[in-house]
Amino acid sequence: MMDGVKLVNTLYNTGEVRVAEFVIQPHSVGSSHYHTQVNELCICLEGQMFVHQQNLEMTVLLPGQKTTIYAGVLHTVENTQAVLCRYMVVQGPGKYDLIRMPLAKP
Image 1 (cartoon, rainbow, N blue to C red):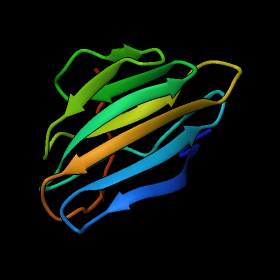
Image 2: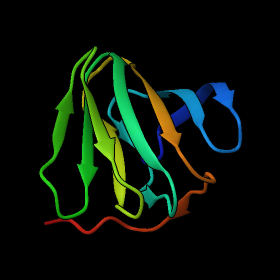
Image 3: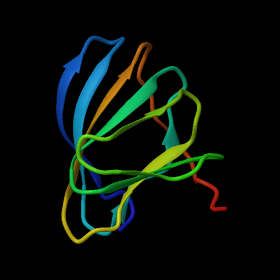
Image 4: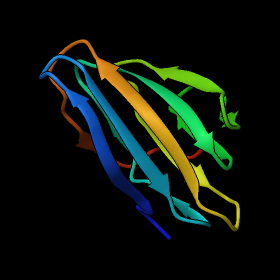
């Protein structure tokens, strides 16, 4: 399933920093996108997730593990498991935006 990522809750948002919780449905992937100004710290809370970043190795995250996605880097997240995956992002500093575009496959 494409774009199986759903926002659960925005925990904090000042306009410069955003903290939000998301879920990825089983056997699904989010839409490819990037942010022009904000870096994104992605922390797995439950399940297993794959973080795909353009021109970088794929990262596998288990609960408690994290990775940083830098501003301007095209990326997406994926859940290949049969159970829900839950994760949190901390984005900033800067104005949040989301630019969708296809992620090239190697």
